[in-house]
Every structure is written in C-alpha cells, then in structure tokens.
Length: 288
Image (tube, rainbow, N blue to C red; front, side):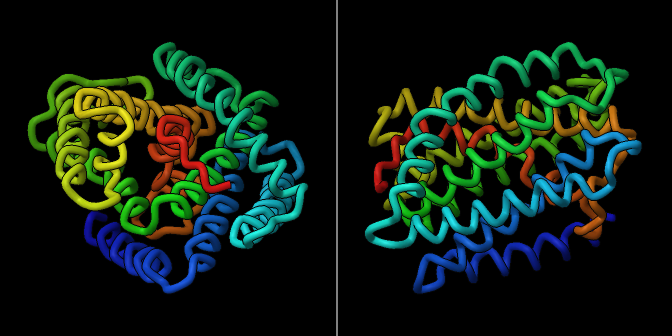
C-alpha cells in the first residue's frame, strides 16, 4: 500500500511541478481548476444518499468546473470582464470570511463532537462543500498569481510537511489517540509532530525569496508568523478529521478510487482546503 501511494504521489508531484514552473500561468490554473472540480464531486458523493439521483454530484461538479474555468480564464487577462471581477471580489473579500469562520467554528465543533452516526445527507454540508472548495480554489489561484510559483509550492509543502511528519511520527511513536471515533489511526504525538514540522518549515522558507514563510514574516513579523503557522497547522488537522468524519458517516474508505493507494483526491487536499482560504485572508494577495 505504501509503495503504491508513493508511486502515485511521485506522478502527481511531477505533473504539479511541470504546471507550476511553466513559462505561462494557465497550466497551473487549469490544474487547480480540474482538481477543484473533482474534489467537489468526491465530497458530494460522501454526502448524497444512495436513494438520490446517482448523477447529482456529477451534475453539480460539472457546473462548478465550467464556472471555475471561466473565472480562472478571466483571472489571467489584463482587463477581465466585470462579472468575473465582481465574482472574484465577492468571493475573496466577502464569502471567504464566512467560509473561514465556518471552518474554524462549525467544522471544528463537528469534529470535536464526532457524531459518526449522524445522517450523511445535509443541505448545509452540501452547500458548504461547494463554497469551501470554491473559496480555496480561488484563493490558491490568486496567491499563485500574486506571489509566484515558489510561494505556492512552499505553501503546499507546508501542508505536506505537516501531514508527513504526523503520519510517520504517529506510526512510530503514537500512543494517545487524537480522535478515536473519527480517525483511530491519528495520534496526539503525530499531530504535535506535524504542527512542529509546519512551524519549522515556515522558519526555513522565511529565508527564501517569496517563500511562504518570508511572506508571513514580512506581513506579520517573526512572532506572528510562528503563531499563524501553529494555527494554520492545527486547522489543517481539522480539515483532515472533518473529511474522515464524512467518510465514516458514509461508510466509505475511498471517495472515488481515482488515485491508487490513496483515499481519493479529496483525501489528498482535505487539510489544504481550510488553510488556503484563511491564508489568503491573512496574506492579503491584492493582484485583482
């Protein structure tokens, strides 16, 4: 299983790096848009009951993809249409605050209460799924266009470093279960290692031009950067546990079987979704 996961991860990383450092911006924006559309589809499949229209998740995610593709294309031109500019402003400087608050308050509360027996179907959860992915997608696009490929890579690595440290330390030294009803494999020791690794990564990238840590320090100072790294790393754990809770309610281990050895594309970005939206609000990318 680990061997299969590594092969898939290497292939995905190669595609990401090729798009990220392409001489033009559109390949990366396209990759982000495709991933967002698939994640919406996978997330909704965990929420929509078997008795509903089996194609409903595909219909909604298709509409999402078309709107995101049109909006992303407009973000690449010097003078975007008014509808696209208005939608971006509304999302990044209005809706994103609401979505971030829901992540911090509601999603954290749901994870802490851990009602795995609750019904999977919920209009609120479904609406939140679409809006959360939309805000995270547009935040990543805007951060990439504002700060460049190395910033985005170092930001994504912030999530990967935290997740990897939590996984390997948890497997080797983990004793205390973090959320046994939601994800029995996650431990307090692993979570602590992930948060610490994320903070160290921010400190390392603070010395690189346009790195995630460098931008954090520039805007928030060294102390602020460390505190925000701690908070964002904790929020990434909430995103991970929230998806695990939805999987338990749906009685599924894989949300789509698209990635061999992984639990779905949503499983690969669950920790990123809340962090991306909040990171945009904290860093104030302003290239609209």
